[in-house]
Length: 439
Figure 1: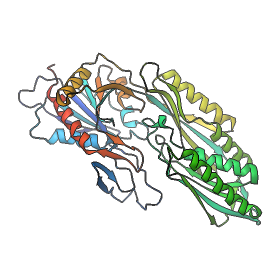
Figure 2 (figure 1 turned 60 degrees about the horizontal axis):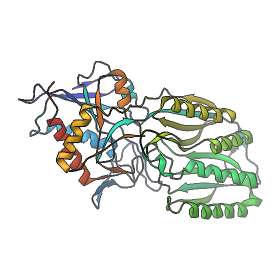
Figure 3 (figure 1 turned 30 degrees about the vertical axis):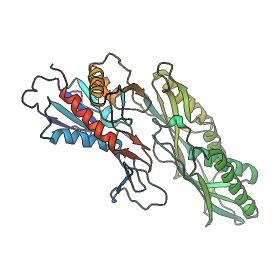
């Protein structure tokens, strides 16, 4: 076993007798997970364990993300390393760090760490589908400085809570049209300001760059003479949005309650800049692939807005299988936020993985799948980001494929993994490893 300078771990299983001449194979998964929880749970990610539940053929967690993304990949690698009955050639198992927060493990992988020329990425979420390509991505983070303005004695305050949205993975589920809590609460705040001249003390929506935001919260301050009208307006807004979203977001709701008046609010110009920027910032599918049916080519996710120490921070993430399109939508995001007086920083990002339909490991895996299950697997690319593109930069000779069991609701407390497809995933992995050709 080896650990590199950024914390990636490589464990190598030596070849079994009779398999010494097989090509070495690299298995890969990532060690981190997305920690999301329902607003009504007291789960502490620093100390509390995940509580797994078996529900009608699925494993899920109690009001939190499960961590099947990518804990199931880790489990499969550990099973390969420890199964006394499994006979294979050399297998390298790579466990990377920080995939969810920027792929820094793959970005900083030492070029001399691995020896294999075949890579099986175990970070896919649709059993029966073999992935041979993925989108590249980058983040665009905007910050708006604000000054604190004192609140007036004749004003009151309420806390707003917008909850119950589906959320989801910003790569796998961006095309499904789920509600964006940041967009929705911003629309409400903008309308309230236009009609009643409210002030924002605090706003907090979304959490992670690669998750569609599910919840948003705000504290607003206004003249007490408007209190009944504002409460009625919020109630009507909730009712209207529930009717619009009932088919795709049946759990959507908004609640409010009185709170102590804070000592300050965001200055009016900064508030207007914030409302403008979030309103104009695109969210969702930008373009569909012309090469693969039903594949998103380019998208952007308005992921979160946070207020802290006189700074409003808005995080967005862009994905595309076309490098120029990724840069174009990122530049569009920058223009919108700079018009609102924000400072914008782009991350270095990560490259996509261009499909190779002539791949040897694709043929081996597809043959194994058909032999085991008597049906041809679907071969396609994925709009989510995988670490494969970064591996190719350091190891351009790698022949790669990605597959996994069925996982639904990744990056949300509804995350769950299908038990029956997990057995098929394991059977496929074993069969592929046993059918790797000689070098």
